[in-house]
Length: 226
Image 1 (tube, rainbow, N blue to C red):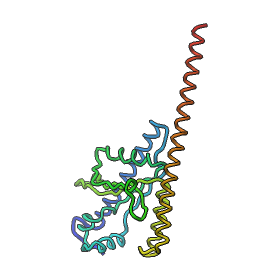
Image 2: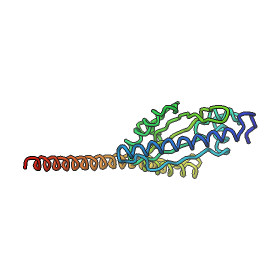
Image 3: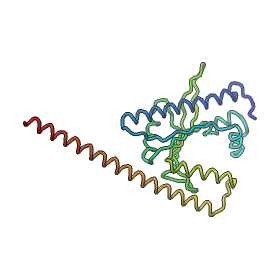
Image 4: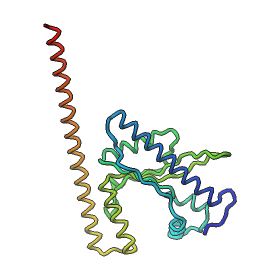
């Protein structure tokens, strides 16, 4: 399917992308563990990873008018190594993106915020294209990874849209496209409401903790005055 380009052989290139997935997943899991330790809260619900199949790579190159070659694959296919990070709340998305961007060995190439600027279909997600260094025995290769960060609701909606897209080969009836956009708005309202509820719970918890601290101080002062 792909011609052998010597050093950039298919197996070597795919090893790079698979290694990038492993390295990046470990990096994100460590960040999540640290967040849990510091804040007693996990911002990440789950992580999905995948490496694009040869068939999908060929299809994408043909779609954009590029010759089928490994150099073109490396240059023009930015989503061969994909990581999807699914969060509970929209506020988590931006915290995670910021933590990723601060990593010393991660270079952010581009950001697309489809949450603040949704696609016409109603699709919402936060995309980052980054490179991370993969250390081989004789060289270091900066390898692209596409990151998608979204809430559970956004992920559910995107999964449904993906199924419909393939069912109708990208030409879904107008009423289905319209209903999908309406569902996207419902998901957004749900995400907003759930975030408000979580903030209210956290605020109540904080107030209760402060009340207990005040009671302990009062009790200690009473004992000292006896």
